[in-house]
Length: 210
Length: 210
Image 1 (cartoon, one colour):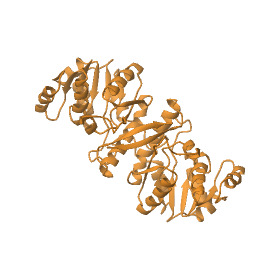
Image 2 (tube, chains in turn orange, brown):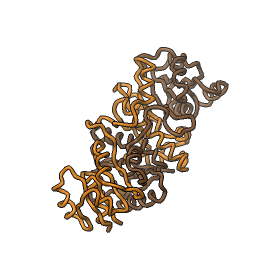
Image 3 (cartoon, chains in turn green, brown):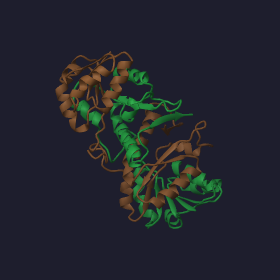
Image 4 (cartoon, chains in turn brown, red):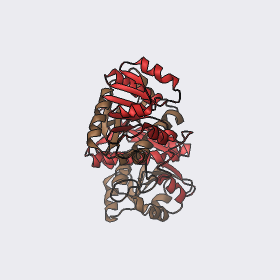
């Protein structure tokens, strides 16, 4: 398969190189450091460097892996792509990585904090299905679910951490209450998987490290 | 510890019962089926049924576990809670579970689909750090990272599924392109954990089932 990479930075070079090593022909394009494109292409088999419109025009699958502010220009310079598969691995990050630039601007937790002034709100327990809390064990085989939580008051978070551990879950401090903007969509993803995709409610998330 | 439960439905009854069995005194309140409150309280040790204002007034920690449309009324009937810990496990779901009612209304993927008409956009690879794609292996010990992906074209999704599997990740079909509204905040959560919470980039997510 011909795979065009539009945006050959950290993400694009990594994924493109992996696919090239699997035998796909990979066309790298669009870099803030154009002089590195040829070098990158030379470093893996089955790869070449080209312009975005060449990369897009000659590929069945295109990876869009530019920074959010460059998305519009990248799509324009790629030219017509109708009918092709475009893999979007972008995230619309704010330049300082402090949040998403589009798509979400508040959360239930933040609204609740506004409705109940002075209260130490901690977001927690919203990313697992209620069925998990009703079952005989929280364990999945030998594995504990990760329970993401966030809040603005450290003492309150410590208390909630204990309550998480007590019921057999693995607490993951996810930062300030604003992170509820990530935990609530995460719950929605679980609902989509459980009901929309038919996986049922005996599913959960595990944060793994190495 | 005294734990007040405001909203004794599926979530509140499950969590409250678990904490009661761990020795906390749990006060259940606020149910759409008030007649079931006493029954619930009688079914576990260290528990009682009360009004929301009693549950909130007598507890150091309060679990808010009502449906989103009931949040405002629940907080009002609970009365003053300043200085207390409020655990928010609500999700601001639309009544038909089709999405979040507040906080987010688009995604990079949907904007990209709009910018590139006719293109089969598949959101993928955005929830793992680029470092994962550059390392010698995608494995975490013996475990594969889950790679959530979504899109509106089934054939395109099948192609992307293969590309995910080829590089050693476990594909998780997350539904239509609209699910990018959940996958992009999920990436933001990973960034918060990796950089904000100092966990670094050698972390990832695993969807587990039982």
